[in-house]
Image (tube, rainbow, N blue to C red; front, side, top):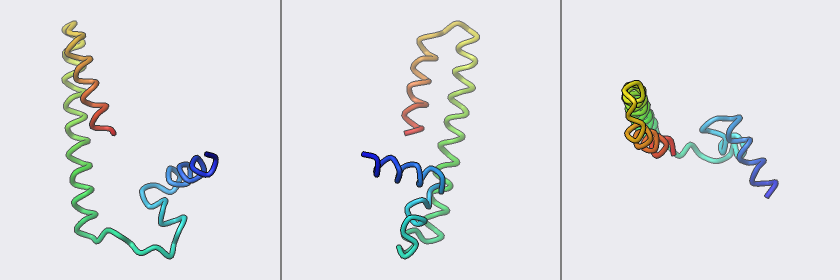
Length: 80
């Protein structure tokens, strides 16, 4: 269990390339196009999350708690 935690911490400290930092001999598995595609998808998710946050804030100001709760659940799904 401790080894798993240490690897997770190393990944968190080294960012998305944490595994490569642990094993520098491993080849880069993603080419430039794949990296750009991943970054585009991340940007799209960030925009969607921001939109949902804005909508949740507006609904919260209107007192629509159930709708806010549903939006927050959707946001959590995007973050996973």
